[in-house]
Amino acid sequence: MFIRKTEIKDLDNVMMIYEDARSFMKENGNPNQWGDSYPERELIKRDISEGKSYVCMDGDVIAGVFYFGIGPDPTYLKIYDGNWLNDEPYGVIHRIASLSRKKGVASFCLNWCYKQCPNIRIDTHRDNLIMQNFLKKHGFIRCGIIYLEDGSERLAYQKKLNFD
Image (cartoon, rainbow, N blue to C red; front, side, top):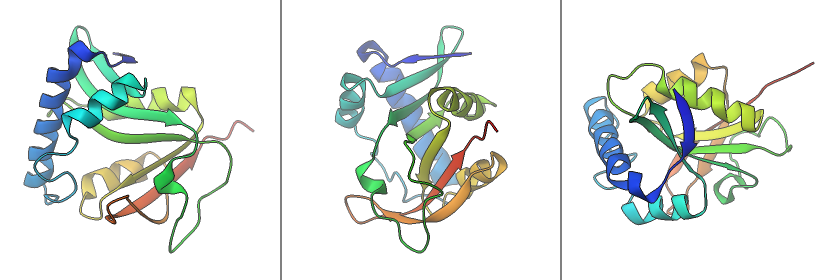
């Protein structure tokens, strides 16, 4: 597998992965995080134009997709019921999804992100137990609660790789 920037020609395949992910979340007790339409096509087009959308390729097949950016994220400026692990520069992962039944894609994407920035922040919905378990398995610490622009609550996590 390898990671590359998402291209506009990938958009239909990426949107199918997100559609599949929404169905998977609903089937696993998390119907509200992405609802019926998130992320919208226009948002992904913006991510692509900003150079922050990436695909995980398994041969010539798009096996996963995610947003990755380095720098302050507006939704992470305020944290409640806790604190971030540090105030150092950090990478942000949003909208990570993989083809259903394809194992190891999310872990591969996460490891790629650490190579870009060893200090990562991510959030998820309270009902997304699968993602919470994934983050715990990968050593993320639950730091508190953040609120999205629309007021929706998310559980906030962070992990910093130590090279000492």
